[in-house]
Image 1 (cartoon, rainbow, N blue to C red):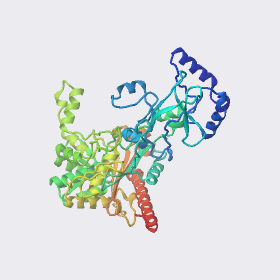
Image 2 (cartoon, rainbow, N blue to C red):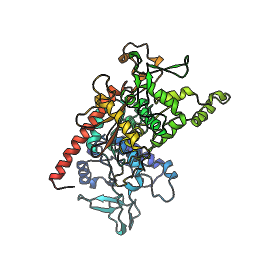
Image 3 (cartoon, rainbow, N blue to C red):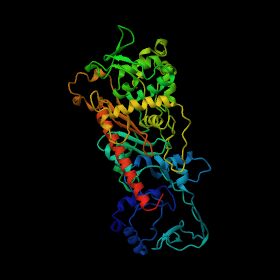
Image 4 (cartoon, one colour):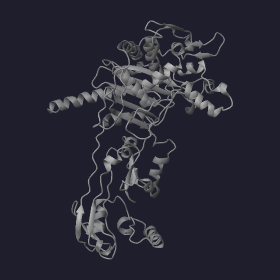
Amino acid sequence: LEALLGVSSEALLNEMALAKKERVPFRHIFVKRNITRAELTLVEEYSPALPGVFTVVRPQRRYVHGSTAGQILGYLNEIGEDELKRQSPDTDYKMGDLIGRRGLEAQYEALLRGTDGQLCVSRYAYGAPQLQYDGQDDAYTVVDEVGRELETKFRVEPIPGKPLYVTLDIGLQQKAERLLDGTVGAIVVVNARNGEVLALASSPGYDPSVFVNGTPDERAAALFGEAKPMRHRAFQEVYPPGSVFKVMLAIAALEEGVIDEHTTFHCNGLFRLSPNGHAWRCWRIDYGGHGDVSVVDALAFSCDVFFYNVGRLLGVDSMKKWAQQLGLGETTGIDLPGEAHGIVPSREWKEQVARKLHPDDPSEWQWYPGETINLSIGQGSTATTPLQNAVLMAAVINGGRRIRPHLDLESPEEPGEPFISARTLEIVHRGMRKCVEKQDYPRGTGRLAFIPGTTVLGKTGTAQVVGREHYEDYEDEEDIPEELRDHALFVAGVPDREPPIAVSVLIEHGLHGSDAAAPVAKEIIEYFYRNRAGATALASRAGQP
């Protein structure tokens, strides 16, 4: 075997000695897994000289696209002894069986697995029955441990698992992963009308094939790598939404009637709750602020002072209510395991957390006005997933409906009833369109996502990771240590193409959504509609629907 297959004879002898010591009769010892067809031929050719050595057929995944969508697919490996004991009595797992881990493999394990067959044979006193490959496709005979053919009494064929058809656009998924290559971040693209997930990219990722035929080091790198390649940053990690949160705030304020499209606030770069109180900055403070700003321009230019004022008028309770309705700080219900919940803080949340941290100081339990101001621009304790941000954006462009993102193509989802007025959406659309299309000074913060001939609605976000005092002494922001740099976010939507899509981009420590995330969204949108149009034209010429 060592000469034929390159395996270690010493390791095999040690394993045989261990089995003998444990007194486990007829225990199978795997000589080599995932053998090639050439290796199979060699073993069968020398089978007379290898009594007790057989080829055993086991199910195996082929991940034909390599690492593409690896975190979404998940992987298979053997069920463990402790795990087997925890299985419910109605399952038929046994030692050595494969079970889905993570991603779709885990989510749809019951659908994909199928049912084992049964085989009853006449049996000699020596060994356990085996299926022996006879050199032809799918042709096997039943033999005992020394190769003697056994008489089959009855045989029940296994029932294959059902196929799973997913919503992913594989070309778009590959494009998104290429755009993230060399960075840490996530890209989400969903059909805004029905919640189909067209791309769900996260970087770094892993190749599920390493769990089929990879080395132990490759498997360890995937499982325990410092950059957490097993964690899908689109829905399993949370980040401050930063100014993306202002989209929700604008909708809430317009719907609650605390502002209208003509309401203005003056921005000189600073905001105070009281004349001598703490000053909250606008990002444009070094330029003297934005001046008098209404909601359309506040969205286009991302004026912090405008939304500080709106948050003060709206209050934490209304912000929490509308955030929940729009899917922020709430699980989306995507059909993948391990989705993060996120946080949009409330009075109740603050009290619950503070009671644990400061059980003897009731003054810490209450909600303070300054926390409302931080919340109004998506900072403080606020944390959402990039997928939640995409759900928010989908509601903006689909007429105000909440979608549930999903990957199972055969489980179509109907979004709920509209809960945002057409008038509010029209105002928000104008602001988000101006954010992208305003190229002359003063320019929209999302101008790098502009695509001639395509209506793109967008909103930039820059989310602080640490307090400003940790990096304000650096003259050039490129000198700021990477782990202290702000995260870059951008959400976008295309309302007037088929299908309408919502896009969410996050680049960890990318500094600015306008520079790091908006151009990525532009490339995603251009690629999707260019290739969708090409595919439609080809299908039309071929007479296909």
